Length: 277
Image (cartoon, rainbow, N blue to C red; front, side, top):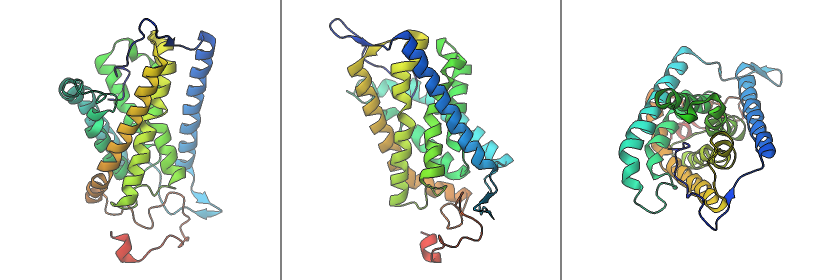
């Protein structure tokens, strides 16, 4: 699981712990909060836009009751696996394998569920909503020093950059097919879920709020391996996630499924056979 409980090699004699000066740490933490709020603001702005270039947008990006229900269901499923099945059953099995935990091998089912949720909901903010609600459930159920709202930026960082990629990088057409495009989207989404969240958590948030510091080398290894692991897991599960999403929403990947395309824009129209792939 991509939580503050991930094991990092603690600083030992002869290895200096990485810790920013307190004032710098506070400034960087504040910058992280500002970035999270700015991205959320950009996503919310686009959910309220109804025209582009003076013409109505083709896709209805406003959240419906069923979208909220799907987010709630997927968030609960993520939490059930994240801190119950994963932490209690899967994590103990992989901890004995060198680097397996830092590679987030135990995150495979989590990433699969997250890709399904993104493919089904197809709304700006869906990724952030799912991972952040999962994070809130973890705080409510398990408490401890990490239950403070001051840890919320870490929960937000795991989703805001995914939504940026979906909205601006892919213009709402993420998972346009169950083939190679889905793999590429999954690889990028998985990497963005891990980075920069893991770096911020290990180098800034945890040292500032909990006083727990690790060596610089341990942080680098953790961030790099976790990013690689989450990326691969999302990439290999994305095609199946798209196929499952199409059983719920047959229009996933259709030519008209474009968040930013004006209603009378036919530039993205494709032959029917290609649209049905």
